[in-house]
Length: 246
Image 1 (cartoon, rainbow, N blue to C red):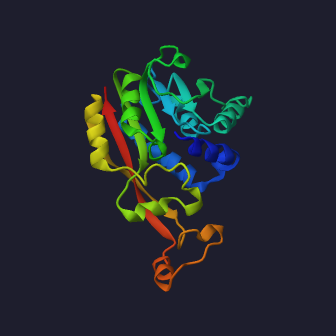
Image 2 (cartoon, helix red, strand yellow):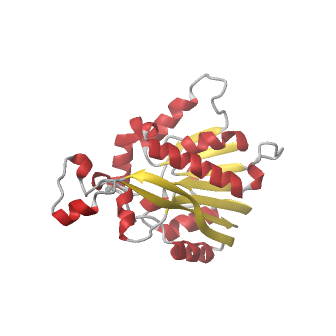
Image 3 (cartoon, rainbow, N blue to C red):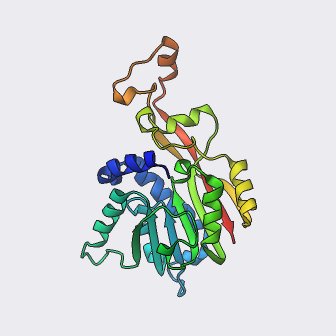
């Protein structure tokens, strides 16, 4: 994560959960993860441990909580982790008791803040397009897994110039890439030492987009051609599931 990403997410943490696109992507990511990892079955007596990298306000962690023995939810944004911590202090009987929030930017499996922990499953959703160094991130995930453990990472696919429209122009700060390239992710998994690696479309999300760059902040189309191109205000985005076993 970059400082730019951190600044943006600290600002948006308070209203993050109100974003319907965030909620939709989280629900779909949760379903895609459950469908690919049998050990997450609710009736499994030996529930796995989970590391949620880039957990944000904990939307995915909370959904996964009943399926896991313990979850470490890491995010570099203080405001995001504060929002998750606040949720976990709720005295409702449905409040998860097996989630530990940690505000940190982890770059090594030997980071002392991890206390030598290793995990059965590593997840992330809508995180990879904010990661500056993807090889470093994938290698880190490999190093944090138990032998036989799996990663299941989800993010939107880069299918060309149109993928830029996933973010409105005023949300570009901290965006390192406009989605994931399948071939690149496959190579990164292999190079990190993962086996049974697979990168595939998990779902398609229809998302409202700006009709022209800057529209939602009061911008104006710069030409008749641009205005015409911007007549479509919704677009389908493929979401990739990046899966591999250590």
